[in-house]
Amino acid sequence: MDDPRARVARAVSGMVAGGYAVDFDLGNGSVPCDQCDRSLGNGDEVTAALSCYEGHTWELYGLYCAAHGVETIGASMGAGSDEQAVVAATLEPTGYHDPRGDHHPEAVSLGGVDVLDYAPMAYD
Ligand SMILES: [Zn+2]
Image (cartoon, rainbow, N blue to C red; front, side, top):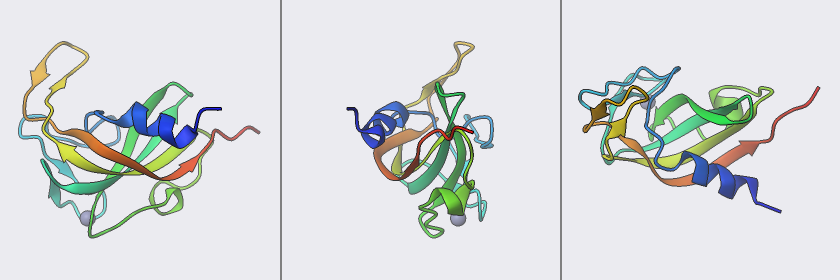
């Protein structure tokens, strides 16, 4: 049986640090901490809350600076019905190809991912 935490770590490693719920700046590769608005970027150690939309796409829910140390699902987004995880990561300057084919060389991604908290999909 596959270890779900290992599967999550594989799925979100290299994922661009931004998304629908996170207001990131592709131009300069900065992402705000969800709690203090501190600008995070290349080399910063962060924690990230993610949920797996309808069981197939991991979406970033929030990114938090080390000072806030948000390390649990309960402390970040709260329990939901989708698969959820909180991971520790280091932001890496990988660049990003967006779905429209544009390349953003300054964008940062999740590297060195370590799953801190995990919850499987909940069924009613
Ligand atoms: Zn913060």
